[in-house]
Image (tube, rainbow, N blue to C red; front, side, top):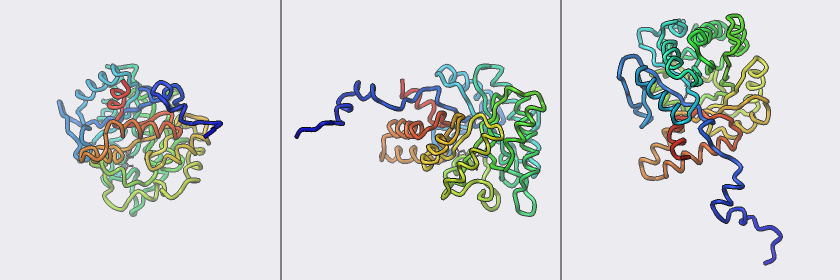
Length: 324
Ligand code: PBG
C-alpha cells in the first residue's frame, strides 16, 4: 500500500504516545470527599463502598494531613448527623458548634492551606431525608433557600473556602452569594452543583450518611436524566447568580453533559465521580472481571477529556498513587 497518512505512527511506542497525549491527570485535579462522624477513633467502612470510611474528626484530621502530604489540595466535607438532631427545619445545619462547623475549624487549624469545601443541603439534617423543608408532602423552595443561606454563612464563619450547594433549589446561588456578601465573606467561593440529576447511583452515599429520602424520591428538584438542554439552562443561571465553579453530577453516565457545560461556560467545571460509580468498579474488580487500577485511571481520564477541570472522587488517593 502507499498511504499518505499512517495514524499508527503516533501510537508506536510509549514515549511517542505520551508526547501526543491530549489529557493528563494530576493531583491538582482532585477533590476528596470525606464522610465525618461523631465520636473518637471511629473508622467505619461503608458497606456499599468497600475501602471507603466514615471517620470521626480526630481520624479525619490525620487523614487530611496525609492527603496534603500526597499533593491533594482540596477536600469536600459531609457529616453524618445524629438522629436526635434531625428535624424538618434542618436547624442543626447552621449550629455554630455542629459537627460540620467543628470539622471545618479543626481541618483549617491543622492544615490551613487545604482548600475546604462543604456540602450545603439539608438532607443529613432532615427527618425526611430530603434536601429541603417538607410541607404537605412537598419540598418547599423559598423557605429551604433561607435555611441554605444560614447554613452557608455558618460554614464561612467556621472557615470554609467554598460552599457547595447540592440541593437543586431555585435561586439558591444568588441568595447564598448575597448572604456571604452581607456577612463580609468576600473570599468564600461557591461551587454549585448546577446540573445534578436524580440518579440511582447515589445509593451508596445515602448508606454512608444514612440520608435516604423517607418518602418519595428527589425528582421534583434533581434533574431528569433524559434532559440535556436543562443542564445548560441550570448552569448558565448559576454562573449568572455568582457561582465560581459549576458541577455536573453524576459523571460517568453524563460525560456528554460535562462536555456541553464546558463549552457553554467560562468558569471551571467540576465533575462528581459519585458513590455508585465507585461501587461499580469495586464490585467488578472484586469479582475479578475488570482491572481495578486501570478502570480508575481510564474513567477519571474520560471525565477530564470530557471537559472537567476538577473531579470529586473517592479514588483520589488511589489515582495519585497510581500516577506515581
Ligand atoms: C446530598 C448529596 C448527595 C450526594 C452529594 N450530596 C446525595 C443525594 O443527592 O441524594 C451524592 C454523592 C455520591 O453519591 O457520591 N445533597
